[in-house]
Length: 281
Image 1: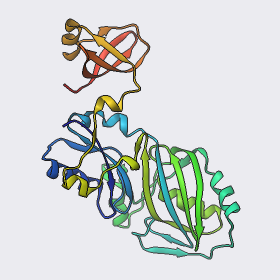
Image 2: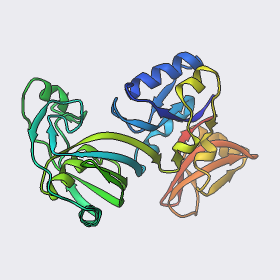
Image 3: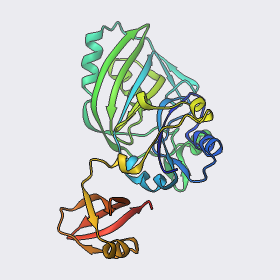
Image 4: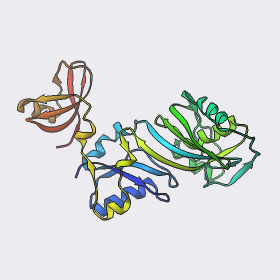
């Protein structure tokens, strides 16, 4: 079995927990995931099965869409409900138009400082390891992009918003920054990832589905259906599979590669040469 399984991760499980469950229930050794979700976050977790683990480098770069709940008036050590409340502040009287105008300020490319409670590695250790020991280390800002952000609901000092963002965006930090712009503090109360590129929560399966054998795996060929294809003859195929670069006059880029209508995998054309990238046969 090779391909991608779109799992609707429930709260309370790490992404690694989900991988282990898939390994056990489907009796498969090679399983990975693309795009970590925190234990308290829910939603789309693409799980890579078999040879699909080889394409993770293409999936982790995808844009993502979230629905988040921002609770105003409280700030925690972790930016969400998991941490200790370290600050409380009154919430000014707000209306939906004010919130919408504030959300618009976050559109576009910008620098974001990742939270201390994150898995970013600093000197060989994950940032949260320092944080748990009460140690402070300097977190380098990263460029992120907010493509779209919109208000869904505002009630009882809780802002529910939908956001499409680039890889590497921390919604916890975004929540804190939005609260600050509104003249108060805040923390992320809930987070659900509803889309990773074209992987939509509407097409996801649950852990119960997996345990009942109800799995819908998207094959690798389907995932790259928008890429153009290159057809090789038998001689070229043998050379290609052995890692030999082949002359090719197509534009530079990633291609699906075939022999006699059999999908071999992916190849990259660069400077009129085709080289193997991901082989799945």
